[in-house]
Length: 263
Image (cartoon, rainbow, N blue to C red):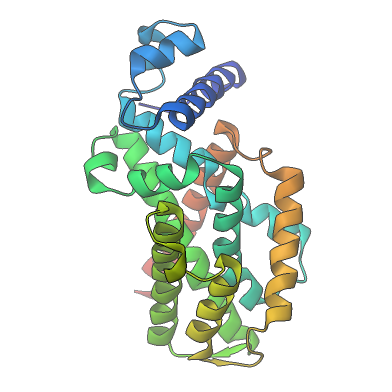
Protein backbone atom coordinates (compact mmCIF):
# COMPACT_ATOMS: atom_id res chain seq x y z
CA UNK A 1 0.00 0.00 0.00
CA UNK A 2 1.50 3.30 -1.14
CA UNK A 3 2.05 6.12 1.32
CA UNK A 4 0.13 9.32 0.44
CA UNK A 5 2.00 11.93 -1.58
CA UNK A 6 -0.54 14.78 -1.69
CA UNK A 7 -1.06 17.33 1.08
CA UNK A 8 -4.60 16.45 2.22
CA UNK A 9 -4.12 12.64 2.35
CA UNK A 10 -0.83 13.20 4.20
CA UNK A 11 -2.63 15.40 6.72
CA UNK A 12 -5.27 12.69 7.24
CA UNK A 13 -2.58 10.05 7.63
CA UNK A 14 -0.83 12.16 10.27
CA UNK A 15 -4.13 12.58 12.14
CA UNK A 16 -4.59 8.81 12.19
CA UNK A 17 -1.05 8.25 13.42
CA UNK A 18 -1.46 10.93 16.11
CA UNK A 19 -4.55 9.14 17.41
CA UNK A 20 -2.78 5.76 17.26
CA UNK A 21 0.15 7.16 19.23
CA UNK A 22 -2.17 8.39 22.00
CA UNK A 23 -4.00 5.05 22.12
CA UNK A 24 -0.74 3.13 22.46
CA UNK A 25 0.51 5.47 25.17
CA UNK A 26 -2.70 5.10 27.18
CA UNK A 27 -3.52 1.43 26.57
CA UNK A 28 -0.41 -0.27 25.21
CA UNK A 29 0.25 -2.04 21.93
CA UNK A 30 -1.48 -5.29 22.89
CA UNK A 31 -4.87 -3.58 23.36
CA UNK A 32 -4.53 -1.43 20.25
CA UNK A 33 -7.33 -2.20 17.74
CA UNK A 34 -8.31 -0.78 14.34
CA UNK A 35 -11.95 -0.40 15.38
CA UNK A 36 -10.99 1.70 18.38
CA UNK A 37 -8.60 3.79 16.29
CA UNK A 38 -11.37 4.51 13.79
CA UNK A 39 -13.61 5.65 16.63
CA UNK A 40 -10.92 7.97 17.99
CA UNK A 41 -10.27 9.48 14.57
CA UNK A 42 -13.98 9.77 13.78
CA UNK A 43 -13.93 7.69 10.63
CA UNK A 44 -14.85 4.21 9.43
CA UNK A 45 -12.45 1.29 9.48
CA UNK A 46 -12.72 1.41 5.69
CA UNK A 47 -11.05 4.82 5.74
CA UNK A 48 -8.19 3.41 7.81
CA UNK A 49 -7.68 0.63 5.27
CA UNK A 50 -7.11 3.27 2.59
CA UNK A 51 -3.89 4.16 4.41
CA UNK A 52 -2.90 0.99 6.28
CA UNK A 53 -3.52 -2.62 5.36
CA UNK A 54 -3.18 -3.88 8.91
CA UNK A 55 -2.21 -3.00 12.48
CA UNK A 56 1.46 -3.74 11.84
CA UNK A 57 1.54 -1.03 9.15
CA UNK A 58 0.47 1.52 11.75
CA UNK A 59 3.16 0.37 14.19
CA UNK A 60 5.91 0.52 11.54
CA UNK A 61 4.76 3.96 10.36
CA UNK A 62 4.65 5.31 13.91
CA UNK A 63 8.22 4.16 14.44
CA UNK A 64 9.39 5.64 11.13
CA UNK A 65 7.67 8.93 11.84
CA UNK A 66 9.41 9.24 15.21
CA UNK A 67 12.75 7.71 14.19
CA UNK A 68 16.02 9.40 15.12
CA UNK A 69 17.10 9.50 11.48
CA UNK A 70 14.42 12.13 10.75
CA UNK A 71 16.41 14.68 12.76
CA UNK A 72 20.03 13.83 11.98
CA UNK A 73 20.44 15.57 8.58
CA UNK A 74 18.70 18.71 9.90
CA UNK A 75 20.98 18.95 12.91
CA UNK A 76 24.12 18.45 10.82
CA UNK A 77 23.02 21.16 8.36
CA UNK A 78 22.60 23.56 11.30
CA UNK A 79 25.97 22.56 12.78
CA UNK A 80 28.43 22.25 9.87
CA UNK A 81 31.41 22.43 12.25
CA UNK A 82 30.68 18.98 13.70
CA UNK A 83 33.56 16.54 13.72
CA UNK A 84 33.10 13.04 12.33
CA UNK A 85 33.43 11.71 15.88
CA UNK A 86 30.53 13.91 16.98
CA UNK A 87 28.43 12.74 14.03
CA UNK A 88 29.09 9.17 15.12
CA UNK A 89 27.70 9.91 18.59
CA UNK A 90 24.60 11.79 17.42
CA UNK A 91 22.29 8.77 16.81
CA UNK A 92 22.94 7.55 20.36
CA UNK A 93 22.18 10.91 21.96
CA UNK A 94 19.23 11.57 19.65
CA UNK A 95 17.68 8.21 20.51
CA UNK A 96 17.85 8.98 24.23
CA UNK A 97 16.42 12.45 23.58
CA UNK A 98 13.52 10.98 21.59
CA UNK A 99 12.68 8.51 24.32
CA UNK A 100 12.68 11.29 26.92
CA UNK A 101 9.96 13.07 24.94
CA UNK A 102 7.88 10.12 23.78
CA UNK A 103 6.13 7.57 25.97
CA UNK A 104 5.68 5.19 23.06
CA UNK A 105 8.92 5.42 21.05
CA UNK A 106 10.89 2.85 23.04
CA UNK A 107 8.03 0.38 22.81
CA UNK A 108 7.60 1.00 19.09
CA UNK A 109 11.33 0.69 18.55
CA UNK A 110 11.51 -2.63 20.42
CA UNK A 111 8.35 -4.12 18.93
CA UNK A 112 8.82 -2.96 15.35
CA UNK A 113 12.21 -4.65 14.89
CA UNK A 114 10.78 -7.99 16.03
CA UNK A 115 10.37 -10.26 13.00
CA UNK A 116 6.97 -11.37 14.29
CA UNK A 117 5.79 -7.78 13.79
CA UNK A 118 7.50 -6.16 10.82
CA UNK A 119 7.14 -9.25 8.61
CA UNK A 120 3.37 -8.94 8.98
CA UNK A 121 3.36 -5.39 7.58
CA UNK A 122 2.56 -4.70 3.91
CA UNK A 123 5.37 -4.95 1.36
CA UNK A 124 5.84 -1.20 0.93
CA UNK A 125 6.07 -0.60 4.67
CA UNK A 126 8.56 -3.47 5.04
CA UNK A 127 10.73 -2.01 2.26
CA UNK A 128 10.75 1.44 3.91
CA UNK A 129 11.40 -0.07 7.32
CA UNK A 130 14.42 -2.06 6.12
CA UNK A 131 15.74 0.98 4.28
CA UNK A 132 15.55 3.17 7.37
CA UNK A 133 17.04 0.58 9.72
CA UNK A 134 19.97 0.04 7.37
CA UNK A 135 20.23 3.81 6.88
CA UNK A 136 20.68 4.15 10.64
CA UNK A 137 23.59 1.70 10.55
CA UNK A 138 24.95 3.42 7.45
CA UNK A 139 25.05 6.72 9.37
CA UNK A 140 27.53 5.19 11.83
CA UNK A 141 29.53 3.63 8.99
CA UNK A 142 29.76 6.84 6.95
CA UNK A 143 30.65 8.93 9.99
CA UNK A 144 33.47 6.58 10.97
CA UNK A 145 34.75 6.39 7.41
CA UNK A 146 34.71 10.18 7.35
CA UNK A 147 36.70 10.15 10.61
CA UNK A 148 39.31 7.94 8.93
CA UNK A 149 39.47 10.19 5.86
CA UNK A 150 39.87 13.33 8.01
CA UNK A 151 42.60 11.75 10.12
CA UNK A 152 40.45 11.75 13.26
CA UNK A 153 40.59 7.95 13.45
CA UNK A 154 43.10 5.32 12.40
CA UNK A 155 41.16 2.15 11.60
CA UNK A 156 40.87 -0.59 9.00
CA UNK A 157 37.54 -1.31 7.23
CA UNK A 158 37.10 -4.33 9.51
CA UNK A 159 37.67 -2.20 12.60
CA UNK A 160 35.14 0.34 11.34
CA UNK A 161 32.59 -2.45 10.94
CA UNK A 162 33.37 -3.78 14.41
CA UNK A 163 32.95 -0.33 15.97
CA UNK A 164 29.65 0.25 14.16
CA UNK A 165 28.35 -3.03 15.54
CA UNK A 166 29.68 -2.24 19.00
CA UNK A 167 27.92 1.14 19.16
CA UNK A 168 24.64 -0.20 17.74
CA UNK A 169 24.66 -3.20 20.07
CA UNK A 170 25.49 -1.00 23.05
CA UNK A 171 22.60 1.32 22.22
CA UNK A 172 20.11 -1.54 21.89
CA UNK A 173 21.24 -3.20 25.12
CA UNK A 174 21.35 0.03 27.08
CA UNK A 175 17.85 1.03 26.02
CA UNK A 176 16.42 -2.39 26.77
CA UNK A 177 17.79 -2.50 30.30
CA UNK A 178 17.15 1.10 31.34
CA UNK A 179 13.71 1.43 29.74
CA UNK A 180 12.38 -1.97 30.83
CA UNK A 181 12.19 -0.72 34.45
CA UNK A 182 12.68 -4.34 35.50
CA UNK A 183 16.23 -3.98 36.77
CA UNK A 184 16.61 -3.08 40.45
CA UNK A 185 18.24 0.36 40.94
CA UNK A 186 21.27 -1.10 42.74
CA UNK A 187 22.34 -2.86 39.54
CA UNK A 188 22.30 0.26 37.36
CA UNK A 189 24.34 3.45 37.54
CA UNK A 190 23.25 6.93 36.55
CA UNK A 191 22.10 6.64 32.93
CA UNK A 192 23.98 9.66 31.62
CA UNK A 193 27.27 8.77 33.32
CA UNK A 194 26.90 5.12 32.36
CA UNK A 195 26.25 6.05 28.74
CA UNK A 196 29.40 8.19 28.59
CA UNK A 197 31.67 5.67 30.33
CA UNK A 198 30.66 2.73 28.17
CA UNK A 199 30.88 4.69 24.93
CA UNK A 200 34.26 6.13 25.94
CA UNK A 201 35.59 2.64 26.70
CA UNK A 202 34.18 1.23 23.49
CA UNK A 203 35.56 3.99 21.28
CA UNK A 204 38.79 4.14 23.29
CA UNK A 205 39.75 0.70 21.98
CA UNK A 206 40.48 2.38 18.64
CA UNK A 207 43.08 4.97 17.65
CA UNK A 208 41.31 8.32 17.77
CA UNK A 209 43.32 11.49 17.28
CA UNK A 210 41.31 13.01 20.16
CA UNK A 211 39.66 10.72 22.72
CA UNK A 212 36.05 11.09 23.76
CA UNK A 213 36.07 13.30 26.85
CA UNK A 214 33.32 14.20 29.35
CA UNK A 215 33.46 17.81 28.12
CA UNK A 216 32.92 16.84 24.47
CA UNK A 217 30.13 14.44 25.41
CA UNK A 218 28.36 16.98 27.62
CA UNK A 219 28.61 19.71 24.97
CA UNK A 220 27.11 17.52 22.26
CA UNK A 221 24.47 16.25 24.64
CA UNK A 222 23.43 19.82 25.51
CA UNK A 223 23.27 20.87 21.87
CA UNK A 224 21.18 17.80 21.10
CA UNK A 225 18.81 18.55 23.96
CA UNK A 226 18.43 22.20 22.89
CA UNK A 227 17.70 21.12 19.32
CA UNK A 228 15.00 18.69 20.44
CA UNK A 229 13.46 21.27 22.75
CA UNK A 230 12.90 23.52 19.72
CA UNK A 231 12.33 21.09 16.87
CA UNK A 232 11.24 17.71 18.25
CA UNK A 233 7.81 17.54 16.58
CA UNK A 234 8.81 19.48 13.46
CA UNK A 235 10.03 16.47 11.53
CA UNK A 236 7.63 13.81 12.86
CA UNK A 237 5.38 13.82 9.81
CA UNK A 238 4.57 11.64 6.83
CA UNK A 239 6.14 14.28 4.60
CA UNK A 240 9.45 14.17 6.49
CA UNK A 241 9.45 10.37 6.41
CA UNK A 242 8.78 10.29 2.65
CA UNK A 243 11.45 12.91 1.96
CA UNK A 244 14.06 10.95 3.89
CA UNK A 245 13.13 7.72 2.13
CA UNK A 246 13.49 9.47 -1.23
CA UNK A 247 16.89 10.86 -0.22
CA UNK A 248 18.03 7.41 0.87
CA UNK A 249 16.86 5.98 -2.43
CA UNK A 250 18.97 8.56 -4.29
CA UNK A 251 22.01 7.67 -2.17
CA UNK A 252 21.47 3.95 -2.71
CA UNK A 253 21.08 4.47 -6.46
CA UNK A 254 24.33 6.47 -6.60
CA UNK A 255 26.14 3.77 -4.61
CA UNK A 256 24.82 1.07 -6.94
CA UNK A 257 26.04 3.00 -9.99
CA UNK A 258 29.48 3.47 -8.46
CA UNK A 259 29.69 -0.23 -7.60
CA UNK A 260 28.70 -1.13 -11.16
CA UNK A 261 31.41 1.18 -12.56
CA UNK A 262 33.96 -0.32 -10.17
CA UNK A 263 33.13 -3.81 -11.37
